[in-house]
Image 1 (cartoon, rainbow, N blue to C red):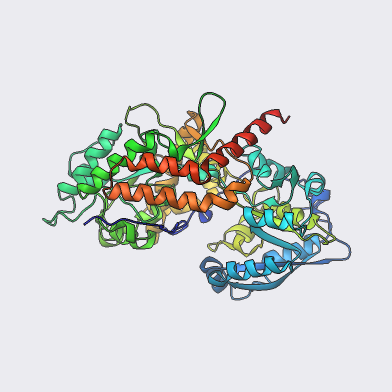
Image 2: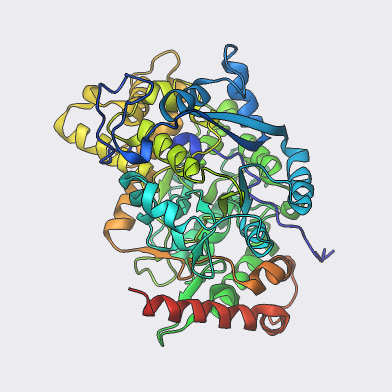
Length: 561
């Protein structure tokens, strides 16, 4: 019986999120210190961007408490949300005393934040999304940070904001004014890989895929040829979840195999930008997925399973292929609990033509730090950004103290910017050290990673924890593929990297749900011609206006120096 999905809510990153914890040491040029790196307190840095407030100032914020932060605090019994190594560092170096107006669990946070923003009673610094930033700006509740940024952003902060082009900083601009400091995100970290159970490949006499036809043959074999050897047809060729674009077990990488890029803006070859989700290439990808679903190569109940539930099929040894980001190895490792011989490896995504694929990278910067209109020290947010980057990736970085000492202590900070290319840089450091046979000299994050890889390869008692790291940073791991993607010019960045347009803020959720419902229903069996009606509806319900606004941004960008 065909199940038609209507108004399916978007399930954001429903798989376990490991991306941040895989961050690596990034050897950037930081701010020149006056003293040794471990010296703390007033006057440690001569640069204005890290100067101390005299007298010290209070800075109020609000805080979301998720499972990750709770786990950090449980692992550090001598530290609290209000009094910890980061709050102490901000006070000792910058003269900034962090004060939380309130801090609540994630389940209550967004509702409480909306009520607070509506009342206009906001803290000195508040983290908001693009829509909230625009609302606060239009209400005159926050201040223009353009001059403050020019005056106080350190060279490292500016470098981080430029790593993926001008779009990161521009995303915080409204009417040409910087109204919020973007919380950096990394598009490059969203690169897709094809994760395959290599023990099943070997058992069935299959080779890694070079084209999408090969992918489809592997999917059929994993479904029909009993790779788990239990005599029943109870395995699936490919993983999928209720949110089609999950970072692991999603279908973004599969669609890219047909040159379909449903979630990014593309250049059309005539100087215009078009939305990938309404392009004809998507239709072929959906038809292929429909055939795979009909052939039981996709779990018939995928539309009811978020990432955590879908992961159970992997843990039970019922899935042999999944598209996903580099940290997918840690999720896939669950299959080894029931079957210690289960082996996975990342491979490059492939295309139906066999030519080198373009790997889509959605622009992901979506949160900003805004400053209350009458707050006297707007530069405080820049100084906190500067210090967080400096102590983790600058010349005075102290990885084991401020980033990760087996606990991701960077999460204690109320601001957590990071270099977009940090993981790729960590891989390159490790690869170079391997080439020179000097891995024992690696420090910081790259040293941390190599230690775990080494313990796994040396079969140490606790070495299994290094399996996932080796699948990412090993000689043929996911990062080696990303390195090739980047050097081979295969990364396809989102062509729109600006602030959300007026119509996006008003209509984007409606359009996203429209797209998601249409795509799911076609996979489940609706005629593929429904895609054409979706395209018409997309333009009618706001897509045409958004396309015009995006192209106006594109034209304005061309005229800027």
